[in-house]
Amino acid sequence: MYLRVDLKTCEACGSLFCRLETQHSCYCAHCDELLKDFPTPESRKRLGRPSRKAKMFRTAEVEA
Image (tube, rainbow, N blue to C red; front, side):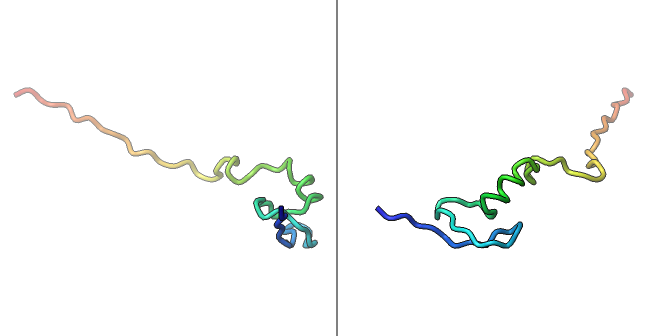
């Protein structure tokens, strides 16, 4: 049985580390531990002005 690893550069501190080929982490173990408390981009609320929703207007039918 073979173990496949990738040699990667940590995106936080710039050090080299080996990760399993099936993992998708871009941080070394030390930086991964430090950054685990930060929110992921998917979980953050979108900042800025709230979006405008289209309003549906009803037209009253006039009896003639």
